[in-house]
Length: 103
Image 1: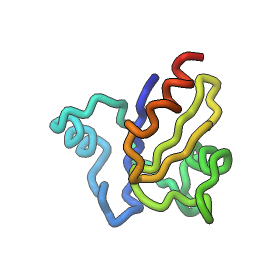
Image 2: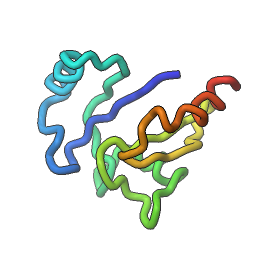
Image 3: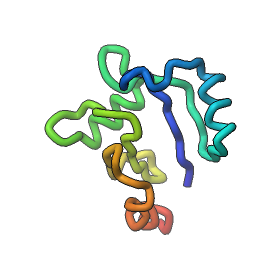
Image 4: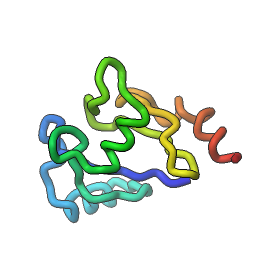
C-alpha cells in the first residue's frame, strides 16, 4: 500500500510554494508518504489522473474536488474504488483499506 499526496493550490491558496518548498515543509513535519508534484484538480487544467479519479468516483452533487484532503482508494489494478471527503479521517477508512490490502 502506498499513500500519495498531490499538493494543490486551488483551495484558498494553501499550497503557494514550489514543489521543493512543499516537500521540505512536509519533511520537516515528519511526513512519510510520497509527495507528488503540485497539480490542478479542477478546471480546464485538471491533471489527467484527477480527471480519471473524478470520472470513476463522482462526488456528492458534483464531481469537482471541493477542498484539499479529498481521498481516493485505488485498487492494485488501478481502479478507483472509493472516494472520501476532506473531513474523513484515514482511520475511518481502515476497514475499506484492509479489504484491498488482503487481495
